[in-house]
Length: 601
Image 1 (cartoon, helix red, strand yellow):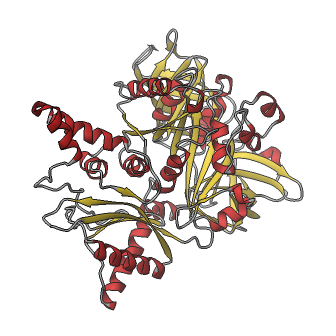
Image 2 (tube, one colour):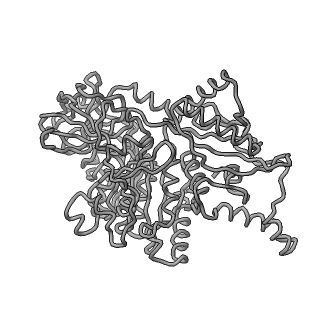
Image 3 (cartoon, one colour):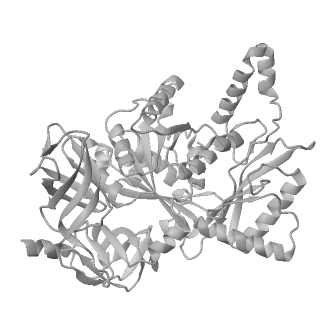
């Protein structure tokens, strides 16, 4: 973590958070550091210094403000003129646009990051002005935290951190996708049931029943398919879920920010389903759930490795803390910290013990991929569940508005991940729009078929999170109704694209790979299951460039050939392959288009 930020929001007992929070872990660390410094002067001096820290001559500071991004520093906003107010409102609009509907204002901070602070009267006046600015641009504000700073002044001075969020309009809420990973029986589905239904579990799995899709899942209590659950936050930061007997449509209408949880299977025999969920649904973040009483067992390490191989930022939730002693929980957390600090991971674990920690963790987590927040909670007693909700509320999107705009200007491309037949509606496909914009009534082509062709179709209607939607933008997941289009012509792994696009279809492709594990030697003729985005198919190793065989840990450029049908791939796409215990990762480097392959054949 940036030491300056942790120094700012970790030290000092004068810190006040708006939501309730217990004693901060970072506070404890800061006090411990103070005690260490003064240990030479005897016990009394040590305790005195911890209670009354000496005001430092050089006050803590934040990194200087940047033009891009959704973070704005303001020294004070007291009685601005009408012209100045209009300018400030325009500036807020820009920051909200940069953060795709969210912005963070630091009040009492100069543009160079120096923490000057404001008197109580100036702080109240500045917050009133900020509220007026937010109303003008159609947003709400929430004070995340306030703290006193030591500046050359007699009266106490404060700084405040404020979250500004747009009031939802026309279903354009901020949507973040979180994949839920972890070993079987670690409490993944139960935790999602508690978060999305708003009711605590009874200790026997009642909360997870609404998440299961199949009878055998209810009977065994084990997830075998991919299910989706939603958790909303309104513009004031309040939780919006099914607890008020709402429908999914009502949640979408009243939420400014939506967290879509992708509940994946924990059991080893459903590993291919879990990998498909991670590669095809493009999650923004991954939540690894570890049971406090069993620790790191089963597929936990494997799931952690998969998320890191696909470069998905990961945070950890230690569940079932009500079942075991404090010492057992601490041992599990230490075990996790040890794994995260290993050379292969190189992560910085951050244990979240208070609301203040949760705010810091959310902001640092999005900025630095090496930060890994660790939560300890219980789905039965509800202990520390609020900290996880605060974290989700503040968690910013990974991409900014500029990247989003660029994606939307490209041609339409929709990945087909799920296929359904719905009575009175016809064929329905579910998936993610990876680029462009898709509207109702749009003409697209879907493919590739077994012979590499594309077929025309019309998008009849669109639904996002179970509610109707007219326009789908890049990066959003949805289901599209295709009317009476023949379902047998569709399969998972296909794409729906604009007719103007000339997609590259291939049987053969080359990839630069790293063999993570293989029992013997990896050579020509070996067959593996290849995952590239939403494509999942068995492929044969046609050639290894410059080598005859590969062993565990070695790199090479390998030519693969699909065995069943050609696929639509892109150069630079992440690739993951497996066969039994054999596993490897890599990147697609070269494609041999279908036309060249047919000519060669």
